[in-house]
Each structure stands twice: as C-alpha cells, then as structure tokens.
Length: 638
Image (cartoon, rainbow, N blue to C red; front, side, top):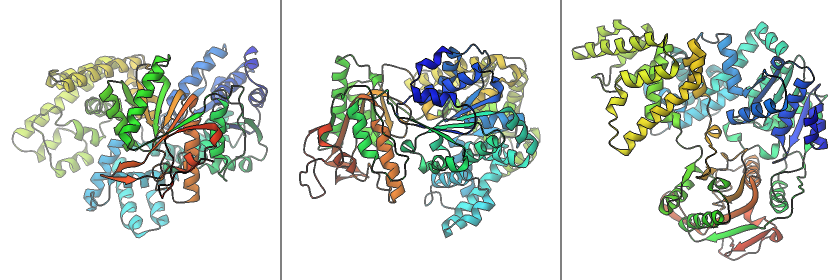
C-alpha cells in the first residue's frame, strides 16, 4: 500500500484507525477528501468487501471525486456505496418499496405549486404569507423529523398553530395523493422505515460494517439519526468535519452534532488535520483572526509550509457600481498575468448583490456564470418534457398531469377543480370525459391517446430515443420555430436533455425512473462546471468546498455581512464562520471591499464597514481608501 506514503503523519494515523468511532477535525484546505478516499482504499486493500462500506457526502460532485480517486488507488473493481445522503435514501426506499412501490421526487418549484394549492384551499392569503415561508417552515419540521401532527403540538406562535400547521398537514396529504416525496421526505422516510421495520434496519446494519460521513458539522437531525441507527451495531463510524465551517444553520444543520460526537461514541479516537495545503500564511492568519473570536468551536491552529504571500487588499468605494467596475478591471489585469477566468471568484452575502456584478460583466463583455442560479432542470422546456416522462412511469403524479395537459396548447386550458378532484381519486383516464363538455372531450381523449402511445413506446425504445419521441410527437419542438434567440436556446436545451438521457440507455426497463431520480438529486454545487472561460459569481454559502487562486469578498458592510438578521450570538458566530469559509477559499489573492453608500430596497443608505474588516490585523492588509466608523470618522485597523 504505497499510496499511504502520500499522506502526512496525522493523515496516515487517521486512515489506519479503521476500528471503532473516529472523529477527524479537518481544517480548511487540510486534505480531508484525500483522507476519506485513502481511508476507503485502505479498507479495501485490507480485505474489507466493497458492499460493507458506506460513504456519504453532501454533493454528487464530492461523491464522484471520491469514486474517481478510489478507483485510481486500488485494484478493487467494485465500488462501495459512495453518494449523498439523499441518494442513499432513494436507493434504500426504492428497494424496500417504501412508502410506495414507485414515487416521484418533487423539486422546489413542485413544492411551491402544492403549497400554493394548499394556501388557496385554506383561504390563506399568499400575498400576506409567502409560499416560500411555509416551504421553509415545513422543511425545518421535516429536518427535525416532525410529522404535521407533531409539529402542530410543538408550534409556539398563533401563526404557526393556525396557518403553518394547517398548510403542512394539507401539503403532506397532497404529496401522498400524488405518491410523491419532497427532498426532505427522503431522509424522513428512511428514518421512519428503519424505526418501523427492524429487519430492514438489521439488514443494512449487517451490510454496512464501516461508515464514513463527510462534512459532519452540516448534518441535521434526520441525517444524524440515520447515521446513529446504521452505526449502532458495529460502531465503525468515521466522521470528518470542521465546526469552523458550519454555515448551514439556516437550513436546519446542527453543528452541535459534531460537538457531541465524543459523548455519543465514548471510545472515539480524535485526529486534527491542521496543515493547510491551499492558502498562504497571510490568508490563514487573517482567517484565524476572524474565527478565534467564536466561542462554540473546537480549537485548532492551521499552518502551512507556503510562504507569507501577498497582503490582503481592502478597497473602499463610494457606490456598488464602482465596486463592480473595479472587480472587472482587476480580473482583466489578472488575465494578463496568466490567470484564467475560472481561477477567480466573486463572493457576496446575498443573491441580490449579484446584479451589479452581472451588469458590469455584460457591459464589459466578460463571460460569467452565477453559480446556484436558475438551473438547467428548472427551465420550463425541461420540466415540461420531464413531466411527460413522469406520467408515463408514475400516472398517480397529478401535478405532472396538470403541467402537460395543455402543453403544447390543445384546447384544454383551465380545467375545473371537479375534473382534477376526480382525476386525483380515480386516476387520469377516459372516464374523466364525463365532466368535460364540447370540444374539450375530444381534445382530452386525443391527449390520452398520445400519452398511451408514448407509454407503449417506452417498453421498446432506449431512454434517449423516448425523450426525443416525447419532444417530437407532442409537437413541443414543432412549436419552437427557432426564429428567436430564446426559442433556439430552448431547442438546444431539449437536445442537451436527450444527450444526458443517453447516459441511462443501458438501464433498460429502469432507465426512466433512474434518470428522473438522478435529476431530482442534483444540487447547486453539482452545477459548477470546469469551464475556464467564465468568471464565477456566487454567494458565500455556494462557495463551500471550492477553491480559487483569487477571491473577491464584496459588500463587507454591517447589515449585509454580517447580515442584519443575525441577531443572536449563535447567528453572529455563524456569520463569522461564513467569513472564515470565504477567506479560506483563496490560494493566493484576496480582495475585500465595501462601499460608503449602497442602494438597498430602492434607496441609498450610508454604510458602516463590517466588523470583519475592522478586525483585520494591520500588518496583514493594504488599504486603498479610508475606512470609517458609523459617524463617518476615519479609523485605523487593529
């Protein structure tokens, strides 16, 4: 096992400690992915069977990277299960036909549609209470493994009791009627399965003798409970994480899971990975200065063999447009020094801040991509074609039927609630013509014949050919003349979907279902391409797990970063961790910027520099422009 020699001493010790619970505190840029992959390879080389290993991550991209590295390290041809929590849940639920023999997985837009339906039926004003608010509340409840009835009992305010609990209950009933699960359901239902079905739990406990978990600080209650259940028997559980990078509390992650790991597993061996292989000394020192002010953390000190490097540069501008213009000019200068656009990342605290940078990119002709923005599979034409595929394999999915019944237009607009209620109860069939009149009857029957013919073709065609058949036979491509740029782009997107479907052609009878599951499990972090010809624009949350030669951290003003909603000590500590994550993405260069006036909610407001700027040690930074306090008085950095 010569590959072990590629690791430093602490990394080697962590890899070789295969028996019993192991906690690896992995600082930013310390090679945690390398340790995880080498640990799996080490297990395989020591005779552990691939089927006895489970490794779970938070993104498909991370899982694919692990698989690729393991394949290069070991002669074992069969790979262990390496995937996301949600991917693992789908695999187990499908094999156990739980909670349905077949189910659809609803994405964020599908969820929003169901919530809007629930709000309408409950006569709750969607303008007063946004569907996104209920979506967040329901997600939180599911992450805490609370069913609607349990949530209603735990609700603390009258609003939650009267509105959110009712919406959650009706929303869940609608999901059930469509035989669908949302993203949070996947984890909730696998925990439910293992709690209710002990033989199923024991089977998986016996199979997965060695469990590895990446980014353990980002686990929520459902993920924590899933891992606890699976690891009860053998306790060969290895978790990797860093509380200083716990930045997802807002979506239900509980960093306390990593703090209490040693209490949960008293025999735990702890390893700290503190050598950083990414950043310069100055960058690490600045990041350390920021994070050391947090109380809730496991102390560690990152160090590097790299030289001190350049000082961090602070720029002060009058307005956001000047800040954006500077970023573009500086990126152009870096290109002249041999950088690629992909070597640079522009980070901001909120999505709304991207507009100024997008406008600056467009104005200068600089190619860019907004990571985590409108995704390929959320585009109308893609969701339309996929909805045809859904009704072919999952006819109970009424939401999919609603989407396509008049797409392309076929004289079936705005069908009555009576029609859809009957469809929900009895299924979509020719019997529904009893509630239709005139031309709609024939139009509906023609539509059913079309779907039935596509279903017949699904048994003989490869998946990619079936997707092409859907686009052709439905008249979808025909209606896109391609005369406008938008229509041409939609045609190209459908052709791209056909190309993606080819990857599943070999799955034969299960191809469509596996394809739809794969699409549903794609996350924002998986959409970052290796394109070297685009500047990366993204929020600080989206940059987690990535690295760049040059990083621009923009909008460093009080109320923006840290965010105005960070009221409690815990929330402020999370903002500080977010700053730490942003800084430690950089390999060579960091630019920090703030503006004196920022246009927020339609009006210009005087800004105050972020405390994170003011805490920067003077010897580590170069300041261009005056940094001021809330009274407008120029001040010195620490």
